[in-house]
Length: 345
Ligand code: DAH
Image (tube, rainbow, N blue to C red):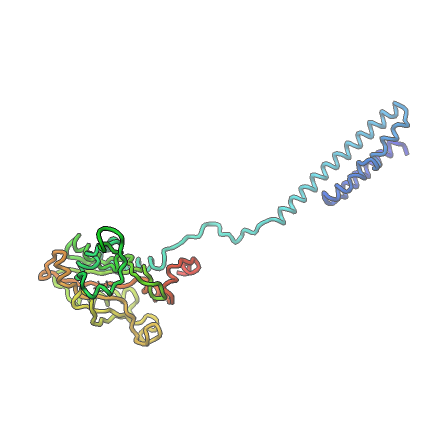
């Protein structure tokens, strides 16, 4: 076999070794046997020395051509294997993103806001308007105008938070939505058919049924010839519209300084339907709020003549309503804002 043939053969062998390498590592390990000093192609250089100049040039040119070919084959293979390796790596490091939602999750109104909106809807459906008032009130709006002078023992019904504003104990965080009654009467005068929802504050420690911040809705009707019968009928119509026809209301005598007579209004226990259970303490009734005929002193405080006009008012907590409706046991859960809890409603 001529040297040229040997070189060709060695070249073919090298190309075969290159083709067999299954990974970049294998290719790297094989490199010395392809191009290294001790490899076949590497050893021919020495043999060239023994040839005469013409032959040396010829064989040398052939050797270079074969080496170039092998070099190209090596580069090609390296690229191929690198591509395979890249693909394998990509595949291995691929993240499964199928659980990530493709569009952002939409939130919704808070449980208490939902209850408030529904209450407003029901009252608006009955012909009421919706009014609002400030949460920081003067003593006059929160108490005095509602027939609760400073010396009045009924002040202890509301554990009041005072604000360090104005002089003395003059500014409070409203303890109920009743001061909005005063503002509505001042701003518009009779006839009035309004509900007034909002946030109220009391110096209470949070427990399963109390929060220092909670929500009430107030109702006020002032017109000519309004009677206690209108109050009872309105509350009953509201109860049926909000809770359904199977739930009714009843009134029990009570006391509030701003109404005379005053009553507490109860509804059929929504948990047991009136049969008696733990929630209603086996009475079949749940206390919802207070109500009564607007006290003549209150009307006088806003320059409405009690001889000409009469009215009724009511007020109850919204949070407890939402709580009962969804069978939530602890009021505090409503306000810790755990999305896992909130997203259920
Ligand atoms: N404001 C009272 C409270 O927070 C509730 C109330 C009772 C409101 C009787 C009224 C009413 O309008 O007539 O305890």
